[in-house]
Image (cartoon, rainbow, N blue to C red; front, top):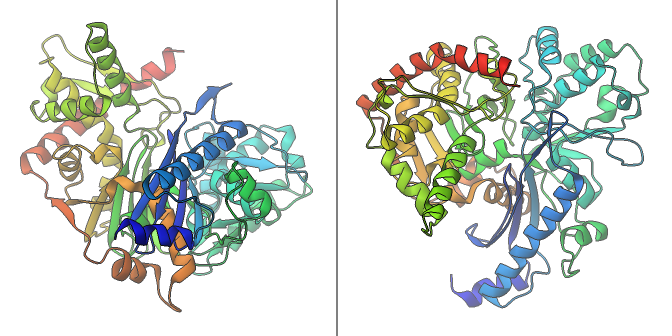
Length: 532
């Protein structure tokens, strides 16, 4: 579409805005009414470890959001010579799970706990046993119950508990709501009713024994399905988002969603027997089920998609953080030698170097655990690199073992779904920074999961684009049109993607590596226990 038509779309508010709070970047994407991204903005940020808690401050959240929106508005001005004053609809997304609790005055009662925290093992195990439903450590209800078990003073003063996306949406609209996908990372969701399992709510209230002035449903957000009315941007919300004062109030918002749900949307993986793998700071696979699982396993989570579809999830806290740290070291070495190094070019070349390595990585071993990893029962992270005296220690093998390490824990979880639970997937789509270098991440992911992996042209747009699409669905879907049909027939019609089938040699090599990886978990365990 030519610039003049885009300018008219922007002037008439016929665009859609999606904003997603990722682990290391807040990103905004503006789409045209044809769903194609036309402008973007970003703000880099990083969580901090304070008093044993991975957290961001409220100042981090709001200054980051405002800077991100400002950079988007600047991009619109630069490309189209147009001020951004209104859009057709807005969507807010963020990292799922975690713990944000407020009192009646709206004051944050405890530091925001992100998904990265693995400090709720006791609560997680007790709730899993009580509900007969896997409750991972990072889920909001696990954090709440852990606080109850520890006698945390703030629990008695709670009035509202939500996720990061739910918090930002609340402040922009005044509505205490949450998209069903994000809500399923707070408390188990019954996909038939579209809200929290009533029997589990009753069991949890029984645990508290009337000790608090609230019951669980009093403090949880209202659950909404994709397409439902989630409120509109208030005057105060507009001022919070756009400090320049140009953005108008009254813009409708879609239900706020988690990054899991927006990843499903951005990869057209909402229909049954589709799946996606998101690989960035964390890594997770989402497989949309066409039947109930036969058993509940601690390594596998059951959540729902934005349209209430049942989804099996294998989630790992760690993926590219260790790789990023090594890339930073390599760049520092180069700069010390007087070279100028482009970070993007460095990643591409080093990833490609990995494909020159031996299938067994020359006997090298690595654990990429910056934070705890529940699938392998590590409550804290200790990045670890191991080698034997006779290992083939050179750059290609070093890079290959760290890419294998980024995939290893995910493979352990997905193998349970594909091999033990016999989950069937017709299409698996990859997205995230791990897939940027062609011929590397996609190829090794396919080999690790024994499944062809597709990467689409829009893979780099990520969850911010996904929540923009959910905003579009909220505004212009036809009556009775399902989200799966909307994506397939409108958004992704004619979209191209490249599919890579697994290489049998790589499959055998990674399978063998995983057996060594499991055997070496004792070394990681020792590092967690002894390196304080």
